Length: 220
Image (cartoon, rainbow, N blue to C red):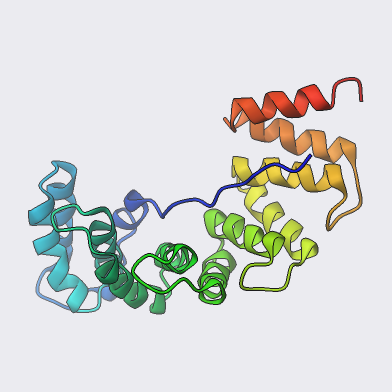
């Protein structure tokens, strides 16, 4: 049975604010300013957070660029603006920020703030995936499985599901199990299928789908 899979929506804001890179700081006491923005955000003072991050982003701080993009995408402290979100994700992504690359890929994938372009989505998912981002690996696997922006390739699908699954991504674990169950891109192996599906279900994957899988495979 083929199960429907859903792309993850966006990168986590907390990842970026906790991983500020000192090499990006070029203005007077930007580290303090960055932390003040974090503090403002955490107390839901989004306008202040945006006002503090924006000059840092304009100075080239990739982490501030990512956070600014996230705020434009989510409409926090500013009117929601996907075009501005793409602009700032692009700047951070070009500096190698994996979370920004993932988010930019998502924007292209869904046509938010930019014309829908699966080729560009694959490009940015690939860059983030190669840096080890599990969500990007999962999304890239989906693109290969569905043949969006790239030639359909189940071997590449399995490769990227495997990488994400090994990092604990429950959706990737479940989908990898289904690939083993169907023998797509890999030799059919019911034991490995059950193992990965079990891991996914233990990690909180959708109970309804876990129940359906178990029901369909009872007695095997």
